[in-house]
Image 1 (cartoon, helix red, strand yellow):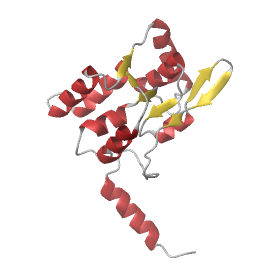
Image 2: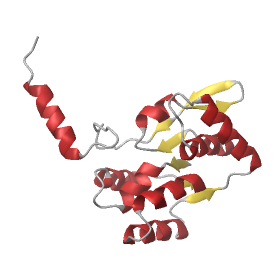
Image 3: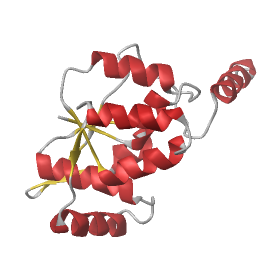
Image 4: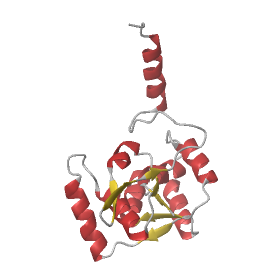
Length: 167
């Protein structure tokens, strides 16, 4: 099972999002079941803006079984609060905490996320062990990702870097 974070859900259903093509490419090559959480869906619906057709695409995706929704029971909710406190210096939001709690609940370590920085830090409790996430990557190769940056900003930054004289 692969857990899906907010970023890919927004990227999949917003054609103007800079991650749209990459998210579609990854989704088309996945061979495992997908699941997400209610906090992730809430965040995705908010970011897709309810008045747009993008929301209906996500609704159809969930209704048609594109991703299961893992419920947060009382223990899961408490675990989310513990995780948010533990990672307060990052800080960890409720949606991310729900993904970590769901990973612990269903026994997976795979996550489809654009948030490589934070999910590279978060750990999944497995008994006495703390396991890292396996982040599902774009099979076409690694991409330079900086949250909140438009593709043109990334290209401009790369061009500036390559123009600097060698020291």
